[in-house]
Structure formats: structure tokens, C-alpha cells
Image 1 (spheres, rainbow, N blue to C red):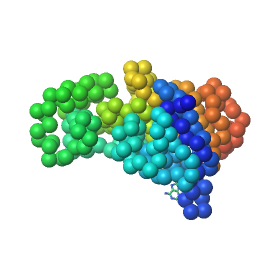
Image 2 (image 1 turned 45 degrees about the horizontal axis):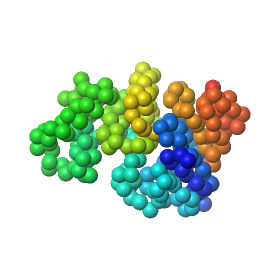
Image 3 (image 1 turned 90 degrees about the horizontal axis):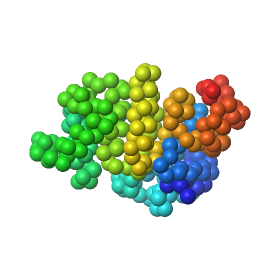
Length: 253
Ligand SMILES: Nc1ncnc2c1ncn2[C@@H]1O[C@H](COP(=O)(O)OP(=O)(O)OP(=O)(O)O)[C@@H](O)[C@H]1O
């Protein structure tokens, strides 16, 4: 039994079957990639895992408990955190302030903006935020306004903010989208380090096959809303069905 078990999930948008009988089992402490051509249903599936969408039929179990019918914040409290394609951070605040807000939210369940002036008095929050920034190689940038950070640093910042929630399952939606190769490689190294140091399961949606093959232990290929194959990266590389699904689009080599 995986920490995440998706069974027979279906989701329609009007006449369009976005997900058709999706089954997915993600093993605890593994990194599982979900790949597939544009429009395959990857984001729809992720949205069903975090309560943003409700499947028409099927079940989604996390650590033996159903996530269906729960609000996104309740699912977050269960231990599932999602990093979005577009970083969700406060550009007017510094890296350290953003990190402290995330640590507050984790400790108190919420953060009220009026508390921003007094948050430096909270020693445990300051220490935790400093530790998170160090572990994500962002300590040197702590006083920088996040609006002036590079895309790669912003993305790492958001991953750090998600990790401050101490999730057991981290969902990454194209974590290296729009990054230069050097930044992508830094992010891969950082995610490997996170996996080594923490008791964490990672599910990742990614178009960049270099990222997928560098990180994933299992890969599920979605095509037209249905899992086509699920296997190890070695078996997925060059798999005829996968090549067919990507025909004319990307390269899975
Ligand atoms: N809210 C919505 N209303 C109607 N159709 C939708 C909605 N969300 C997604 N779709 C459709 O469902 C299908 C699956 O979309 P989804 O975004 O899940 O694919 P994807 O694999 O994540 O694609 P991409 O790689 O391009 O992000 C597409 O045909 C898309 O147009």
C-alpha cells in the first residue's frame, strides 16, 4: 500500500473526460513523477489530490484516510503540500520575512498580516526560518526583497515555505519551468538533498525529462486522462507506448 492511493478516479469538464479511471499508487519516501503530453490531465489529477477539484467518481486516500470532501487547508494539515507552477510569495517582503510568515502559519494554523511587526520577537519562528533558509541555500539572500530574486531562487523559496509546513507528501508542479539549465540543475540537487534528509514523499509533474530522470524512482505516463504505463525510469525510456503518446511533441530519450 502506498502513502497515496488513487483508485478509479474520473473527472469530466462538460463533455470532456479529463481523467478516466486513473489508478495511482505512490510509495512512501519515494519520488514519483507524473508525465504526459499537454492536456493529458496531470494538473487535473494534482488538483484532485489537494481538494481544488472533486473527482466525479473514485477515491483518493492519503495514509489510509480519504482526502475527498475535505477543504484544501484540511488536506494541507493532513500532510500534503503543493508547490505551484507560479511562486506564491509576497514580493514586497524580504526572503526572511516570507519564510517567517510560512513558519507562523505552520505553528499557529494561520498568519494575520497585522502581526508582521511583532514576529521578530518570536525566537522559535526566527530560528526555524533561519534554519529553513540555510537548508535551501538561501541564507545569503535573507534581506533581499523577493520581487528582485531570480526565478530559480523564487522557486526554491517556495519549496522552502512548503517544507516549513513539514509535509509528508510534497507535490511539485513543474518545479523547474522557465529556469536556465544551471538553475534547473541546482534545483535537482536540492530536491535530492531534501529527499535524503527528510522523511518525505515527492510527487512531481514535469515536462523536462532531464529533471524527471534525475529524480524519479517511478514514473506514471498519462495520456488523454488515462495512465498508459507505470514503471521505472529505465523501462519508461524508449517505451514504445510512451513514444507514441509524445509523438510530435517531446522527446523521451
Ligand atoms: N476547469 C476546466 N474546465 C474545462 N476544461 C478543463 C479545465 N481544466 C482542465 N481542462 C481540460 O482538461 C484537460 C486536461 O487538462 P490538464 O490541465 O489537467 O492537463 P495537463 O496534463 O496538466 O496539461 P499541461 O501539461 O498542458 O499543463 C485539457 O483538455 C484541459 O483543457
